Image (tube, rainbow, N blue to C red):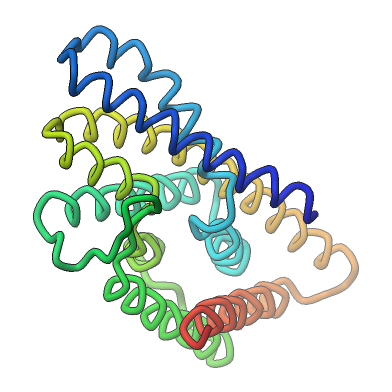
Length: 239
């Protein structure tokens, strides 16, 4: 596991360096064909970046399993989470740079939004537990609320790219790479959501076959999802 994490960290450093080179090259030549030619590589970078720690993959999987979300809805939730995750970074870089604390060699962060997101995730987790205990029905659109809350933590690589592109005077290059990364990160998160959806429903069916009450099994999974949200977001808050 340590070796894999080390490889992912090294991969992320390689991604940062490669994107920086392409943006600097575009700033010097203004050649759109060259920039668009590396768009597929940007998608691959986004996918590779999505595999690195973070991006709320565990939170997403926990919510999908605990809420018994079906495949299509799970995919839409993952897509919405990705859009907010990447889009919030673009918005911060373009119009709210005072929220960003960054160095020249590392990706930016938005501490205020990150703290807000984690507090709201703790609240959402508490609601999931309370709802399961009380047996309350699910609320339409709740999954999209989760996506917005979780996505408030901006994508650090997108912040890095946008800030770098703006510093080079070519924000359009940053937007191109942001779109590419949205596609790549979205592919990873949708895959996670689909695996969690099919796996969670298979687990519920297995529990039912072994004599467990389906309703109680679903509520138990929801409690576990809520506790996971509280635990992970709370740990990040105090850590």
